Length: 214
Image (cartoon, rainbow, N blue to C red; front, side, top):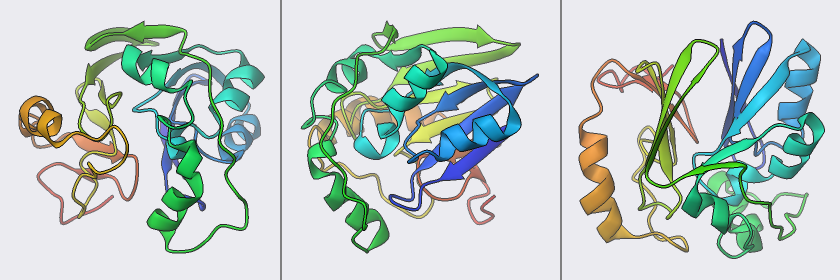
C-alpha cells in the first residue's frame, strides 16, 4: 500500500510504502505528518529514501530517522549536500514555501543541515525490500543529487521531475540545464507508458494518461 501525504506548507508530497506493517519512507518533508501517520497505524519504518536534497523534501529527515533509528538511502551527491544549508536550500526555505503556495507561512523555516545518508551510491543502485524491487538512478538537472526511484517497474517516484502540467525547475542553486538535457532527458524519455508517476508535488498519474490525474 502506498500512502501519499501532502505538506500544507510547501505542497510537497511524502510517500509511505507499507508491506505487512513495515514501511519505507520517501522524502520526509512534512512537519510531523509522517510521524503521525506511522504512529497512528502502528507501522515499523525500515528505510528512508530521498529523491533529492532540497529543504521541502527533507525538513523532517533528522527527526524521523532519529525517532525510528532507520537508515537513509541517497546518492552520494545528495548525501553530501544535506550537510550544507545553502545546498539543501533551507537558507531560502521561506522563499520556496511562498513560491509553491503563494502565501507566507506563519511558521518560519530555520536554516538547517542533516547528517549524510547511511547508504550511498554513485549513479545507480538496486535493492530488494520485502519482496519489492527498487531501482535508483541519478538524474541531475533540477539538483545535482536528484534521482528517480522505481518500485517493481510499476511505480516511479520522480521527485521534482515529471510534475503534472509543470516544467522542471532548473533555476535553483545547483540546477543545471545542460545536465538536464544531456543526462536526464534521455532517461525520462525512455520511461514507458503505463507506469504510475508519484511526483514530489501535485497529483499522481499514469504515464500516457496525463489527462486523468490520480
